[in-house]
Length: 301
Image (cartoon, rainbow, N blue to C red):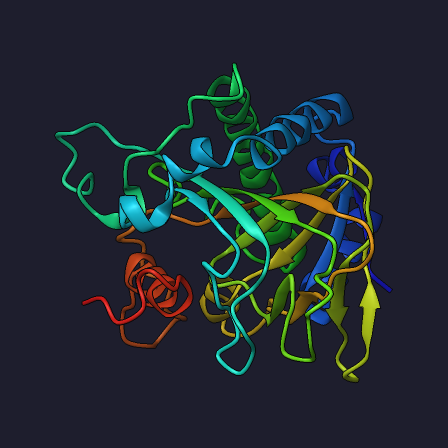
């Protein structure tokens, strides 16, 4: 149903890996990926760092609260994000960091390259997260090149589009589903991702559900070292609909869950409009969608 891809086989462009990747990108909108340069131990270490932060002192989290920073960097408490306007704000907590540019870069002042906000604790948190972030971006670029080959496009197309990526690394903390939660309450409500490609690591707990073309919802689960891959609205638009952005959600259950999505997006000024359409920069698309989603940015100009 959801293809399971060996990253090394895809890098070698084996016919089996290319066919499975093409099916996942064009028909399902989801893949799982294993045998990458990111090991299970590296993922587990990163999950442990996020867990220590989320389960730690509230004052430590409040010091990097997005409501204070005014950007999508730092900690967002329950209700800080609303991906579906028909549902209530999501009850999960998040921690976001992104790519920072040199101060003299013309894009450095843009919100999508905002300075990161690092908490004082736990010890070594910034070093761990930044190391994972660097490795995850490298894995994602290789994967994009493999996807491009699989759908019959130029595998080198993306090579120069991610020199200044608007990449966002997030730690998600899904607590046990609250006793007060109703039909409009979700860990994260049904949505499609906004950007290009999402590389998702999880602690192995169930929770994520994907909507298939017939409307049914199916669970997707992966242990550390295997990644869940999905594609966003930007890549669907960029490929003129050849690659699918598929709805997904987390309702939540009796066990808490941590996941780490890397939202991998090109440089701000990359034209992501399909061939023949008026130009649209990746940054314009993302900025609009962030403003619609983060509750502290809603209504901001």
